[in-house]
Image (cartoon, rainbow, N blue to C red; front, side, top):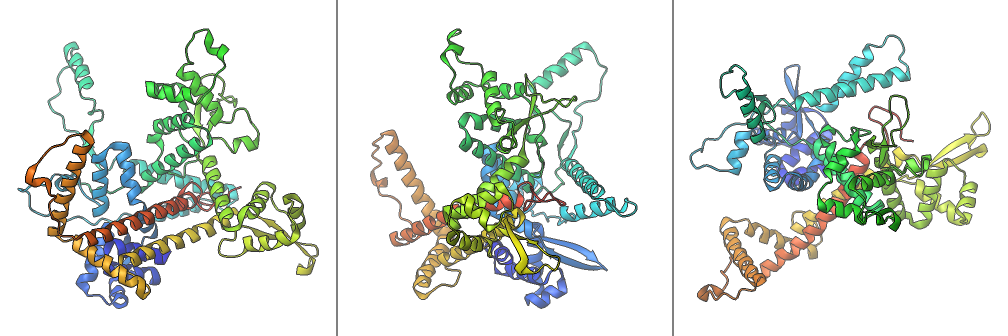
Length: 602
């Protein structure tokens, strides 16, 4: 993981910042004087690197005995691999203007609203540069540890397991409440436009009309221009989790079921603050029906269901949207299979009334089971990795142990219908490093625990298996970064590969020149205009301008750039897939199969 973080810092901030990151990753918390000693950089250069890294929240800094101590933020560094996903999500959710704002804030770390507007809408009159305030808040994990310690200190005597669990839940609730209040820290009261007057019928009528005209003025607060804003990765993680859930519903059922799940997620989006939430807020079926009231949505809902001719022949019309949504909810909640196996495959669940009975009958409310879906997605990823590494036979053994629990070698051989010479090496491979998908559980026959008189049972330790897969994926991300450096000409390679990489590096450096970029943009614009005219079927004779403008890059250099862009696209796609797996196992819900604070996944 340290090597991956160093490569990320090198690609985003350059070699000097990578040197600082390497020193902090290897040595831990260091002061400015100690960093000068280990990095061997000039004080001015080191100070600039620290300011940039603190601006992007990659470094924490605190004061201990009048000495400022710096520490590397590994989680914030790894999140930088998802910046492309953040920009894409902002564009899908809020439009191109929002994606430009997100990209600008990601490039600068944190900005005030006037600074964002100045960058997006540059003004020639305003040329003065404002200095950013580098304010480092206490890290979220440090807050959680502090709150847990305070809650545990209130317990008198030896704490029980229930008291420890309640203390952790109280700490999480306190942290969540503070995060909700922190979302309003960048807002201030809206100034009143006029003095208050006596309320009359005419004034109240004008007030109602004004409220109908100004839909955007729903709250009495506006954005404070003095507050620095940064991207909230937790909220983007919520959007990424929701997209994965919709994708899973589409793969499991059809587009209609995915549409219902997307509507339920959209309606409860404001209450989704963290991906560690087990369930969504309750939502009624009528609200989902109102959200899916367009003709296009109704067509998608009807296309995914098949009704008997007798049910719709009387009215000679398709069922209503509410009827279709109820049928989809029955499918997503596995209402026809109330067994534990059926509940493990569900996406939704009905809330229970005060009497304890389920409200599945009628127009009750539903909730999205984030924990059940996350557990199923992680298991699917585990099975995929097992099949890729060990084939169908290894997958058969892992599935048997996941469903049946601990078994010895004879039981595995008999239930998988495979001979012992095939099962024995597979068990050894599955339990070996670095993945360690299965583990052994010793059951001694005697009190002396002699290995010769001990029965060893095989089982799947989900926490250890997920941890091994995540470590392998992080190594893969590091190898992808190294491959990108080699292809670009910044890394080490053989002589045959190094010659081509040096050419790519020289062409990339040439393309970054201002005159080359301007000439190539004009050339590209000309070709786009001609292609647009051909698409419209226009045959316009533009005379002397028929010849495309000459760029400053040769055809051979353009071929090198096209080949490099194809390789870069393949590497980005592969990196995105691996990062999605890391998100599933490391960030989504229970980290490594454990609830935040303890308890293993069953």
